[in-house]
Image (cartoon, rainbow, N blue to C red; front, side, top):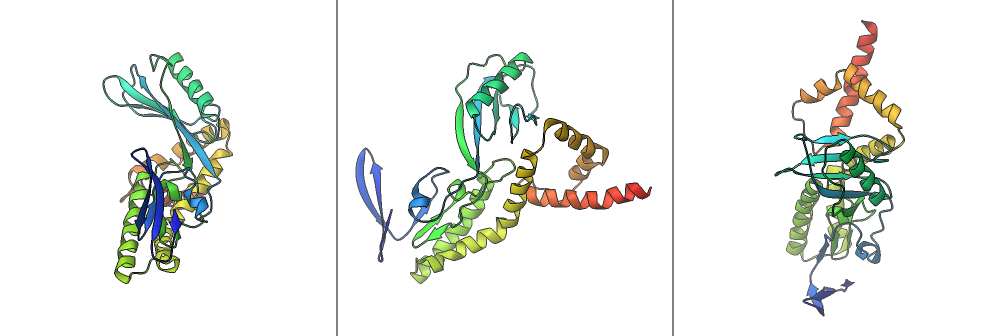
Length: 267
């Protein structure tokens, strides 16, 4: 991408040929791992995990299973999700060595009789845990995983990406109306999406980092603690509960504990 005073030029492969495109503006929505943000001085994302998943033949599993095991998926979690026709998806999100840990997960599931075979075709993807330092420049915006707009707790990026895409579209609409594609004009995009998601991303990130430090014994104790203090029931009874806002859920749960534990101690 070459940014000029009067337009933006993009050199790209198109139908097997090198071509030059001209436009007023460009949106980087390449997913995580593109070199474009760095080349445009938007910074880089240095904290990330790796997702690994494969389709498997399942046996006797009809509900989603999630595994919190630091020996199986260190720093993250693993899953087995039934889909249809005795098929399912098995995967995990470790910090490193995704192939090794996916094979370990599959071997574990096969030993339990939950999948028929460990012979699979795996897929891998890098998942950012923090956003880019800067998501705008002259004539350019970065959106979605390319900008690090991803839930640090689960690695999901669709919902946040759609929210930020709406903000990006509105920002560009205003830029076209004003015929101003400068960084100061497009900077409102970052102000708006950070105002909407900034706290959520920070809370989710530190929750993820805290979880990474736990061993299996501590995780088991947390599960027991949650059950003993009615946290599952509290969450299911929450009004306006949204799976897409994990930070808000975390804070509400902590407030619930701050009230309920002293009350129990008094009783």
